[in-house]
Image (cartoon, rainbow, N blue to C red; front, side, top):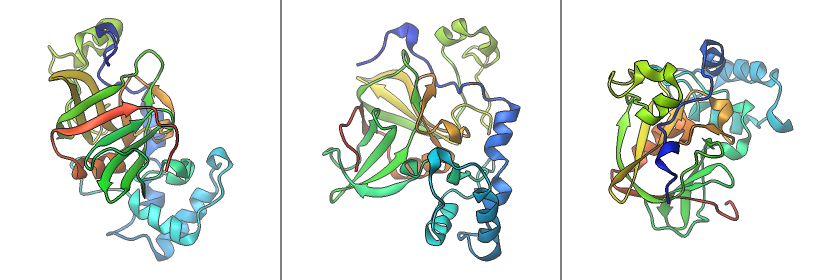
Length: 255
């Protein structure tokens, strides 16, 4: 199913400003690493700095091996067209970290399932396994649910809010369809990657996309789209193809 046209929207973050953006990327120097590993003094410096931050939801610190694993997973990506800062993953509930899990969905391999009850996204891999990611979702009144397909995907896409959204929020006029949208970049609401959801051949205007707002993962705050950590949406983008099926629903349990 889809919501009425007046509520359809193309993904806008809630109040991303200079302060919150710097907050999102300000810890890059703490856990950015050279190459593919986080070891030695760099790892230990990052661990000490991040452990001084207020923990999220009272979670305990990660073990040494776990810290190194996730520091590598969520490290800065300087090779990107717009270099990505590292994610301060220790401030995110570990349930939302990317991980391989037993598949709880029963869907065929290659299917994306967004579990709206638990703010999780699964990509079924076959052999009873799924890759699971934490996501942020739309607030009440802007959700979309049902079956569709990933019609196409884009790296560092432009953002073009639809006319209905611009009518509600005139400050978005510079980024309207008529004005060509917003240029790609770190401040673009669609982030590093976007996967475009269609249903019955029609653009739903809902996307799976990256976001620098790591604090929004596990929450319902955006204008309707499925947002992911930038490093996670790149991983998902590399795993799926155009035409991949997607199901947005509520699962009763998690893996």
